[in-house]
Amino acid sequence: MKYIYFIILFLSFQFVFSQGEINARKKAKRKIKTQEIILKPEFIPINKKETFAIKGIILDSLNSEPLSNATIKILNSSKGCLSDIDGKFNLETNEEIIDLQITYIGYNSKILKQIKLKRGYTYSFNITLSEKTQLKK
Image (cartoon, rainbow, N blue to C red; front, side, top):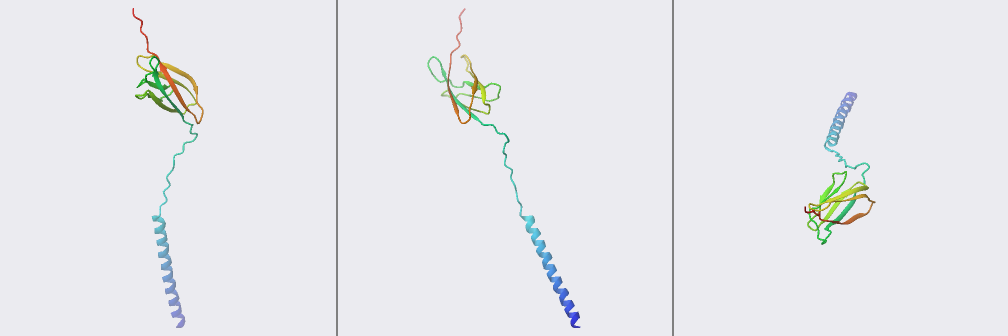
């Protein structure tokens, strides 16, 4: 009879402990499911080229007055800008060798060819444009 009580007691303890172990595993699984790791990828461009800064001022050649809204364009590129009210402009490019075109209504346009840009430098230009002259007949 002692053996029967012992076997029953042993089986009941084993059942209780196994239920506790099952509950502990379920809780651990719940914790794992609720803890999320979110990785946010950071965009890092490969072979990013250096950008070069170009700035300057556009002036009238006769009286050195600033020309506002003059068009400054990097040829063979979609980059360009307009000069501000003081004739100043700022551009950035990735190209190391550029051709810069400056135009203004009523003035002769100017093209600065084969400008070689180097890393770490900001290039500043003082550009003068002359008025177009019309010959009377």
